Amino acid sequence: MRNYEFTVIFDANEEMTEKGMEFISSQFESSKVEVTKKEDMGVKNLAYQIKKQDKGHYYYFELSADPKTINLMSAEMLLQAEILKFLFVVKD
Image (cartoon, rainbow, N blue to C red):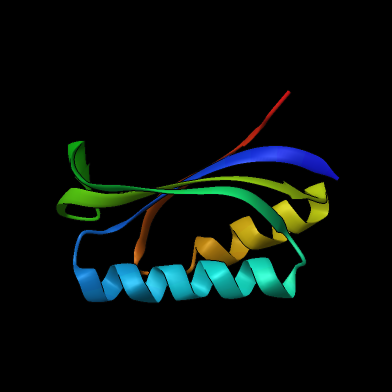
């Protein structure tokens, strides 16, 4: 198990954000990912348009997971319309 920082940007639409969080939560539960910190950073203006959106709803997580699990979750997240961007970073 490795420690990761995970940041995700959802569509600023409240309904899309809820769908995205449900997806993320179900992925974490099914993959047995241990979330140690979750922070709702709110809606912010984006530096540039992503998928024709000017604003995004940011969430930050600190978690522990197997590297293979992270790779599988990344592939699934690329297919979700409500997720504008995401980033996993290995935490020292």
